[in-house]
Image (cartoon, rainbow, N blue to C red; front, side, top):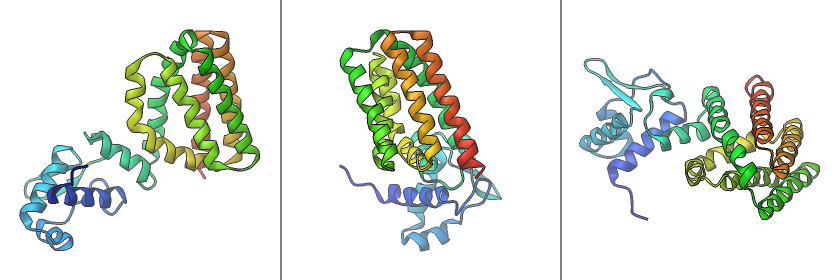
Length: 233
């Protein structure tokens, strides 16, 4: 893998500080002189790093006032948004919007999969549901998350639409982080197992409308659980 340029390293470190909440949206980031001393680089390097973040709409420059951090919904870098969603502090909006995105894509993927899923893929789904139940019974959160993600991954590929799986690939890290957070709660695990079984039954029956409804119900339960057990806790 190619090494990052010094400009890239500084831009990355500054983004880390933004994601960590050191510079919340609407605040002014330090000037070039302070940042160059902090990162032990030239002011020119800092200037180029800030231009990089400005091009990604993470920062905006207001003449005579300074350089400000933009709200997350204005960022134009998928990688940066995913970092904020997986590593950021108290970003409830990002958590909710991630489920909204999943709902839009996964309900359609599940509907397509109902008529395209293979017997081997049905077997894989059954294995994942069984693994979720076993992990729930033994309080193994890591194994539960792995089986949960595996179940959804099978459906995405079973949809037969190559774009769906490719679109979801960059989301894997943030999905794993979020699932690990929510799956600490036994009630959420129980809800997920029940909905996964309903989805599996619809796919086994080859019932496309029912499969879509089952996945949609799962997404709604996921959203309700997030709000009840995590965001309002």
